[in-house]
Amino acid sequence: MNTKPNSTTAIAAYLAFVAALMLAVIASGQSIGYSSAIVGLLATSLPPLVARLYADTIAWANLEHIGKIVRGVVMTVGVALSFAGFILTVWTFSRLAVFLILLQIPLWYLAINLVSFLGEDPDSRA
Image (cartoon, rainbow, N blue to C red; front, side):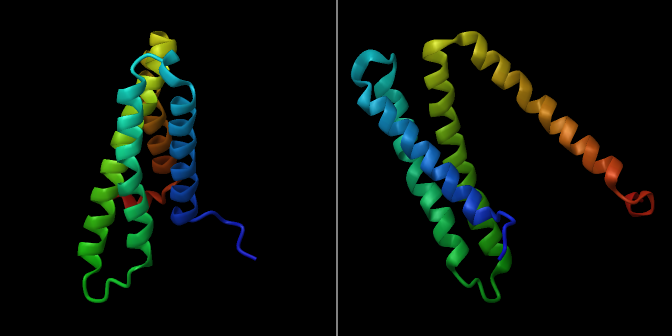
């Protein structure tokens, strides 16, 4: 049994998170500020995320580079829209939390790349 998660599983889990967040905002009614904008951002992120899952099922025979481009573009659009909806949701409750989230992104990116760089074989860096 394969217990290692793959990109399809991760994208499906993220899609479920985005849908659950959207439904929570809808259920709250107008008690959350900017709820219309939040739902709009989250709702428009769902089709690209589903398209990314669909793109994984297509056999891109002789078009692997096009498949990578398509998957990259739809994933970028989906994540960007859903991230904006998530940030706007958090913004309505805590502006400090948004600033801390946005501050952490480059720090985690640098930390992960540093660990990856240190784990590489020194001969392969040249």
